[in-house]
Image 1 (cartoon, chains in turn yellow, purple):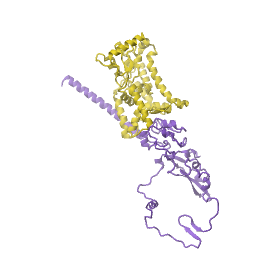
Image 2: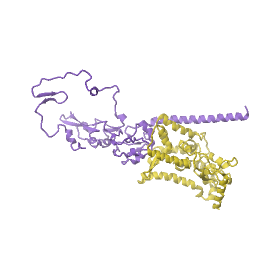
Image 3: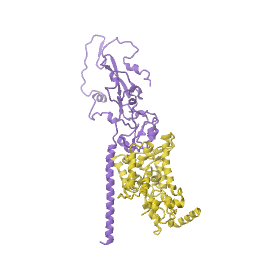
Image 4: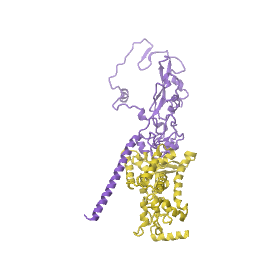
Length: 301
Length: 285
C-alpha cells in the first residue's frame, strides 16, 4: 500500500516546504482571519464584523447572510429584511463565482477539525471505512429543508456543528465542544472524511451552489504526472481528481469539474510535478494548457 | 438472462439497496431531529425574548441565530443560548433579575434583526410585550406587610400605568394603609426593571412570558356591565331605584359615597387620596 511516512517528501524536495504548503497556510490564515475579524469586537472592543456566519454586518455597512440558513428560515415562513436580502445576494454571487465549497475549505471552522483528523489518520495509519455513501449529504440537505416545512422551525440550526462551532467561538461555546470532539473522533476512527465528505448538508448546499462556478483546479500539466498518488491521498474528495488527471485518452477536460471539489489546493501543494493549478472553468483546450505549461516551465527554469 | 443482463440487474439492486439504506438512515436522523426540536423549544420561565420577538413558535422559524441583536444591545443584556442551556441553541434571551431590558427608544436590537424574528413593525418600545410582570409572592413582598417600599412602582419606565399602587386598609395595625403594587397588562412591556429592582433576596415581582403570566376568560363569557354599555341600555329589566326617607339636607349615594350631608364638605388643600400626594411632581410627566 501507499507509504504514508514519505507523503509530501517529493514535493518538499522539489519545491521547498513553504511552496508545498502554500495553500494550506493560506487556508488556515483565511479561516482564522475570518474568526479574528469577528473576535476583535468582543475581545478588544474594535468592531470590524458583528454577528456570525449566519448573518453579519461588516464595518456597520456591509451585510452578509448565509443563503442556506436563510433558505431554511424562509421555508418556515419568514420574509427577510432588505439587509438580509442584499447580504444573501452578495454571498450567493461570491460562491457562485469562486466555487461553493470554497466555503468548506477556506471559511468553515469545522474544516480545521476534520483536516486534523484526516492528518492524524494518515499518521497513525488508520484505515477504517464505513458504508456511508457520499450522497448521504444530499439526503441530509433535503431533510434539513423539509423539516422547517413540517416542524415549522429552523430545526437543523439546533444541532448544526458548523454554526455551533463558529458561534461558540464568537459568542460562547457551552457544551458544543462535545459535538466537535464527536466529529473529530468520527472522522478519525470511523470514516475518512466522514463528516465533510459524506454527511454535512451545509457542504452539500454549497456544492450545489457552486456547480457552475468559474474558479476551478486544473490538472493542466497532467502529462507530467508520475502516478505517485499523493494527490488522491490528501484530497478530501479524491473521486473528483480521476476524470481530470487520467481522462486525457478519453478526451476529458483537465479541469476538475465536479462541484464536490472544495478548491482547497492541497493537490496543488502536494504535487512535486506541479500538475495542478487554479484556473478558469473554461480553460479546457488541451493545446492551450500545454502552451501555458511551457510558458510556466520557462519562467520556472 | 445473459451474463451482462444479470450483472446489470445486480448493480441495479445494489444501487437501489444502498439508496434505500441511506434514505432510511437519514429518515431516522430526521425523526430524531424533529423530536429533539420539540423538546428544545421549551424555555425556562425566567428566559425572556428581546423586544418585538414573534410568538415563540414563529420565532424559532425566523431567528437565524446570528447574534446581531446581542451585538447591538447597548446594555449588553442579551445572550445567545448555548448548547446545554434550556433554550433553543443560538437564540437570544435575557434574564430580567440580572439584566433587564432598558427600553431604548430607538430599539437597536430590533433594527439589527435581519429576518424580522424581532418584528420591525415595532416602532414604539412601549408597545413591546416581552413578557408580563407579576407580583408573584404576596407573602414576602413587604408592601403586603404594610411596609413602605414602592421600588418597583418607582423604577417602572411606564410609571403609574404599568404598575400602580393600590391603597388598602392595613388590618394588622388597624390604622395604617398598605400600598400594594398592581401590574396592568395593557401597559406592562415585560422589560423586567421592576424584577431587578425588587429589594428582596429573591424578587417578589417577576417577569414571565405572557402565556405563563396571563389567564384567559372563557370565550363564551359575557360581562354584563360591558354588554350593557355596548347596548346602551340595560339588558334585563332595571331594578327599581331604592329611595330612603331622609331628613332635609341629606342625600344617599347608592354607588359610592353613601350618606351625604350637604354643606358639610371639609375645606382642605389636600386630596383625600394619599396617592395624589405620593405622585405629586410626577403627574406632569
